[in-house]
Amino acid sequence: MGNRARTGHQDKSSDLHNKFSMLRAQLETLSDSKLLSKTQALNDRERKLGLTVLFHLREIDKRRLCLPLGYNSLFEFCTRHLGYSRVTAYRRIQGARSIGRFPEVAAMLLTGELNLSVVSLISGIITKENIKNILSRVSSKSYRDAEISIAMYKPIETKGRDRVKPVCVLEKKSASDIGTDSGTQGSGKSLNVETNPCNYNNDTTNEINLCPDVETDSSGEVGSFEKTVKIELKQKFKLEFMVDPEFMKKLERVKSRLSRKYPGGINFEMLFNIIMEEYLERHSPEKRIQKREKREANKQNIKTTPRSKQNRDSNKQRNHEQQNKLRHSTQETGNMNNKERSRNIPTAVRDKVYKRDGGRCAFVGENGKRCDSTWNLEIDHIVPFAKGGNNSPENLRLLCAKHNRLEAERTYGTDFMEKYYRKE
Ligand SMILES: [Zn+2]
Image (tube, rainbow, N blue to C red):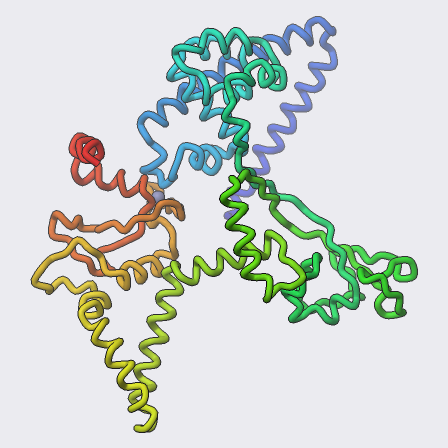
């Protein structure tokens, strides 16, 4: 930043500072009644302005303007572009969509009979049939009271919503744990102690060194060395979700399968980690690429290994190669000189594109903002397949479903794509 820019910024903030000092001084001279009536007037203006913002958001939503800017959703646009908090973004979007469907909601927002939190509460349940009844139940009510008076409309809530809540937890860490923990994963300890080496005599910002003479270590043994106990503040996430009995049965089966390896029991975090690792091992493009590279390296090794071993392995290898021959001939290259042009993009090419684009939507908006969404990723032909584009990695990229659709509409027109989606 240049000096001029910095000075400009300083000027602005000192300007503001002066304005605020003047305002404070003015307010101090106001009579009580004047102060209250002015606040009321500001409140009315704020409500009007808030509603105007909702109408703007609604129009942006209707025109899907966030997509060309590189945002995957109106929510992402509101949080990242407009700087709203997640809660504010959620409420305003619900509000914007509700006033689009029901003008009476806009009217009540303006008079203050409804506030945005109540609108977001009812937005999922109002229909043309029940709106009159619901609005009369929640009119001029606080969020809590409104929630109670429309509970009958939300039986679905008994199903429970999945929740992810960031939390900080205090974890005990004793000197003996620090010394011996490595390799104890799966020993059934309820405490998941970090294994990174750490000097427990040096206080770090997030460690509290409890008085060594008072505290014992987690095993309760008292020894001069083991008496040091640390409390660590750790970032965690609290997950909450409902499951059905079938899920519980499956969970028990998985736990029994793992019980030999973890005789002391296993907590949910460890269990889900194992399951997710297993899934990613099988299904992630990165792993497939690794395996492919390993296969290639093995092939090279065979060429240089002694003949006796080579003979032993050669049958297996030959079978494997025959099986893969056809596949590989097109897979590795996505070669377009094939006689038959195929829409099917070989897995190896897909994986290559996935790795190159970092597993994220590669759409770049007009302002240079890249989408980066990892959700619903699809492979897109940069020169469309129907217009002769090939399956080489250079002509392919990852796009999230929404940007893929946007690009398709840009290429083929909205009307054409509408028909296409309807057919689907
Ligand atoms: Zn995208």
